[in-house]
Amino acid sequence: AKDGGRGRLKVFEEAFNTLARDALLIDEALQHAIARNEFHLVYQPIVEARSRKLSKVEALIRWSTPSLGFVGPDRFIPIAEESGLIVEIGCWVLQEATRQARSWADEAAGPICVSVNVSAAQLVDPDFLLLLREFLARSGAAPDELEIELTERVLIDEADTVIRVIDAVNAMGIGVSLDDFGTGYSSLSYLTRFHLQTLKIDRAFVNGIEHSERNLALVRAIIAMGHSLGMKIVAEGVETEEQARMLTELGCEYLQGYLISRPVPAAEIRR
Ligand code: C2E
Ligand code: CA
Ligand code: CA
Ligand code: CA
Image: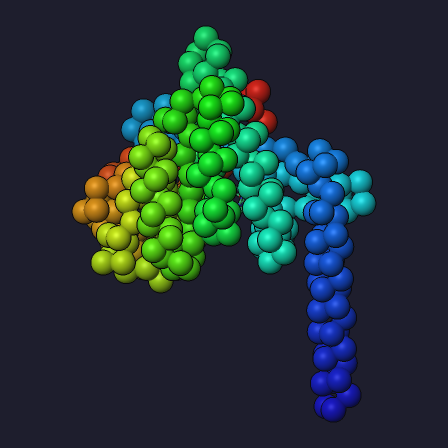
């Protein structure tokens, strides 16, 4: 039994060492990723629930390197947040997203609003508002062609600064969404402090609403709460027609998920 315990510990240690080493490799490779042009954005449609018409798209970063291959954002974004590099990466994302928004606006079919994920460190960076203004001005994109998405985590850290920045972003005419709602700890009264226009229900709750009474009850409560605060609701991670039908019936205004479309390159977005 003793040996078995040691054996398991060894396996655990090896797995841990591999993770730690990978994190170091990722951290190092990230330092050159912008300069080497290794990032690109893909876009996932968000549609109006009833008409299924395209409402906006969410920009999602992709990274591929010669040495590490494809590394997903769930893996490298936390490492970039840890090192602080997320500020620079987020800046690249904003610039690229505004450029793409302008490019869509120039097409005959008209503009498409692009929603961009913004990390805590990026939002409270003293240059954030300046850069946002500059990218809009430089690209010529209109403020209503851009939105930002924040997670509950962002609201909890440095709340006073965050309230100020959100108000300034709103004053520029840019909408703000609360991402991954339900996974954090914010209460209703807490949320009223922030001026958020959209609430995105995390896919953990959307998943299985057709089988789980508990998830259904949670989703219903989240929608009621969001509406009572005057917010529009996006359901994330919608994968089946049954989920789409139920969410639409529950009063969810927008749907996003593999049922509608996977994230795709800009050229594949159809209105
Ligand atoms: P998120 O903001 O919650 O983005 C939604 C994620 O769910 C995306 O994963 C998307 O591909 C995935 N997804 C969409 N529909 C479905 C579905 O129907 N089923 C399932 N199983 N998944 C679905 P992705 O692109 O791997 O991004 C993961 C996370 O990485 C994002 O979660 C976001 O937190 C972060 N991220 C991505 N791009 C950026 C960025 O430019 N900046 C920052 N700060 N974070 C980013
Ligand atoms: Ca998001
Ligand atoms: Ca999300
Ligand atoms: Ca998420």
